[in-house]
Structure formats: structure tokens, C-alpha cells
Image: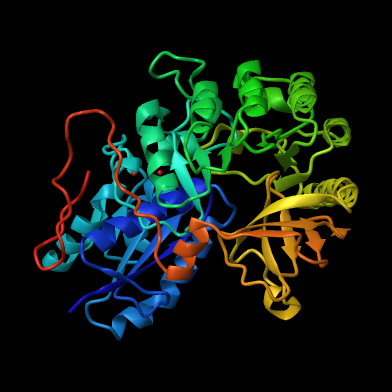
Length: 490
């Protein structure tokens, strides 16, 4: 009898893509996807960056304890960054968990589940370095029209607030040919948009000695037949170079969108964060981007209340936000992460001070975002129709999608048979702080292969792409009946 699985994903795009690989592995091993907690296997792909991540995990595990007690044979697995960090602590606090695996051995999930079932004992396996590059694993893609493509994993930076390098390891780059092979395979399956993923995409190529590799990769994506949109996240200001800006401007399918973390507008805070750029350098990059891409939508990440942040430091952040004119900013209140240098810094700020600054920053950015979106009223934009992004679409009878610059657009489809994956043109009637609304008639509607694939209920194949290296690791997964083994990733 076929066993079912469900995966709960927390955190960043890298985790989302890792979950696609976990799903691909499980389905290759004979499991079937389930959309609910009544699955035979529940996998948590965790994040250690977000505040209270551990409380959220243990709360969810506690909720499942009686469910598992009433269902013999049910298994619970915990992977991702929190598993890499807490290791056996998870089994100590939640002894009903069957499998704990880390960020470096995603490929081991099926065999660990089988081993736990056979041995009737929890299996904890945390690798200290990457064993199998995730993009060499099978995938069950979530979308018919957009795909994640990992170009690297890990990070070589030493930001004092960040725990990612200790959990994801040093940067490991995929060969450009392997990346392009995956992009081409997705486009051949009808995918219209890919997002290139890395902790620091514009340091891509350092490992194999080509500092211009990322710009070359963007240009190469421009030659992939059928690929209409290319995005990437996230670059680091330290490594941002003019050749990348030129590639963005000169490659038609690279979208006019840039997400580049600022973190703070204060040079003193950036120094304590160990961010190797200063605010003037950051703003100079934005000026150069806008000179080449005047309509680029630029977004960022900002941390409020870093240890020792003074009123003057915070004002410097507000000043940079005013000058930068971000389309969107993801703002976070600093909270200590055990194991990071910043967690032990003196002058940790009171919660009330951080909250007040956070609210002022959010209010400023909301006004800037609203001004920018109102300026788009009357403009015709191309929208790649998506699913699940407009939470009120059912009530408003709208559909939603993303413009080429990444802005969320809600539009009225009228009586047209528009599907997720199709492409429409609409005129913006109203700009809100976080989205655009087009309630007028759809100006054009193009049915696409991606829409066909979505309508059929299938998904892109997610064929594994190699590293150009001899085979290594455990043998490929086998269909159920026999004990599943690991295959040769995101």
C-alpha cells in the first residue's frame, strides 16, 4: 500500500527549493503527496534565521504527538537549518520524531525514514559539509510556470548577525553548464520564469576562478529558447559589479528588478555587522542600476535595533531609505541568534526602543512604496498570471500575477479563460502600497505552454542535473517495495 507524505516549509527561497527536492526524492522512492497532516510522513523543513523558529517547531511537533500516537506507522522528519543547528536536541525534546537530517544531506531523507522504520528508533544524521549538491536530486516542482534554480549553496561572508554560514557551510558553486542545463530543461517543459538562487549570487564563480561568471550566466540565460523572465536573489553590495548591471540591461529576458540587502544605513552599524561596504557605496550601485534600468524596482532587507544602534545611526538608515526610494523593504527587528557574534555584543537595545524605530521605518517605507505604485497608474504592464498570491481573489473575482519588475498585480479577468501560467497585459488603475490593481478590461491575453501544463495538473519534470563529476554518495533511489536508497539538488 502506497504511503503518503506532506512537507511543511519555513524560511527562505532556498528552503522552498530544498523542499521541492525532498518531494522529488520521496516520490522517486514511491511515496504519494498528501495535502494534509493525515499523511503517513510529515516532514518539517525548518529555518533558524526567523525569530522564535524553535518555539514554532516544537509547538507543531507537540500538536502532532497525539496524532502519531493514534496512527501506527506514521513518521515525522525534521530537516533544514534548525535541524542542522540543534541536532540531537530535537529528539531529546520531541522523542516521537523519527528522523533528523541537516542542510548538507537532504539526499538521505528516504533511506533515513526506511532505517527508522526498520530499526524502530530515531535516526539523527547531520553532515558537516555538503555531500550531494541538491540540484543533482530529483524534484517535484510546485509551479508549472516559474522555477527556482540554485547556482550556489553556502556563504563565505562573516556578517555578525547571521547564522547561515555555520548552517549552510562555505560557498559551493555549480558549474555554469549544469546551471544552464537545468534552466533549459525547465524552459523545454514550458516554464516561463526562473529565479537564480544563492546566498550571494554575485560572488558566483569565485570557487572555479571566474569573477565574471555571474554576468556571463545572466547573458547565457538570454539565449535559452522559450525563457521569458530571469530573476535572481540575493546579491551582496560588496561584490556588485558593473558587468552585472550591463548584463541586466542588455539581456531582454532579465527582469528590471533587484533585491539587494542594505541592513543598515549607518556606516558604524555596518562596520559592527561586518558588512564590507558603506552607505555611499550602496547608493552608488543604485544610481548605476537606475542609469541603465530607469524603471527597475529595487527592494531590500533592513535590520532595526542592532546592538549599539544610536538615534543617529537609525536616522542614517531613514536618510538612506529616503534617498534609495525602494519599491519595497523587508524590515526586521533585531533579535539575538545564539551562535552568532552579535548575540554577545554589549548594548543590546530595549524592545520598546526597537519597536518604536521599527514602526517609524515601516511608515516611511510604506509612504515611499505607495508613491511609487501610484506613479504607475495608467501604465500598461505585462503580467505572468500566478496562483495563491491574491488571498482575496475569490471574494473580489480577480486573478493575480507578477509584472516584469516583480510587483504584485491584481486584475479582473472578465469572461476570458485565463489560467495561471498565461500572460496578460492590463492597465493599472490603482496603486496601493503593496500591490497594483487593474479592474479595467484585459488588453491582451496570451495562452502559453505553462498555462497548458498548469491546467493539466502536471508539473515540470525537474530532471536531475549533474555536476560534471564522477558519481558519488549512495546509489539512486528505487521505487518503494525495496528499501529506498538515496539518489545522486536547488
